[in-house]
Amino acid sequence: MKKLALSALALALLVAPLATTGEASAQTRAPASQHEVQKKPIQHQSKQTQHASWRKGAHYKGKRQVVDYKRYHLHAPSRGQEWVRVDGNYLLISIASGVIAGIAAAH
Image (cartoon, rainbow, N blue to C red; front, side):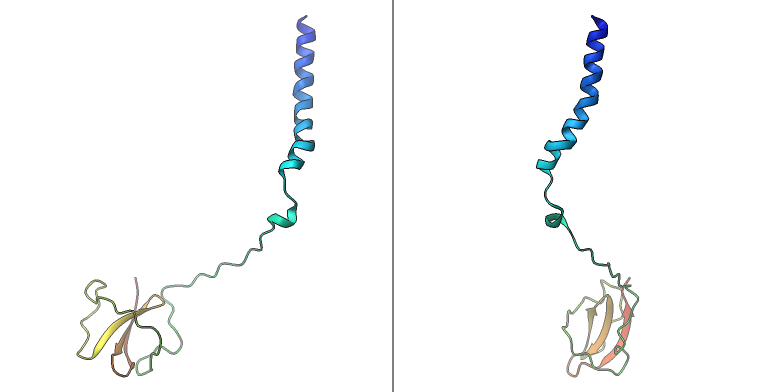
């Protein structure tokens, strides 16, 4: 009786994986074309990079996100100037003309 029970158990263990890899998994799997994901390479940008046109005396014409210079440990701007953050860098620009007076890298 023990041999019969062990044989049935061994047969069940051998047949069970074959049954689940057949029809059951084919029903749960969707066609490969629906799940294809096109991976794009990740481009990391260093915070220390500086835009080619950012130099003292150049004109900055982009969006101005004014920052609190004390919070970021920047020196106080002169009258008519303000610190703005652009792409991980701080630019000291003239409010009226947009001329860059200084550049500092963000930490």
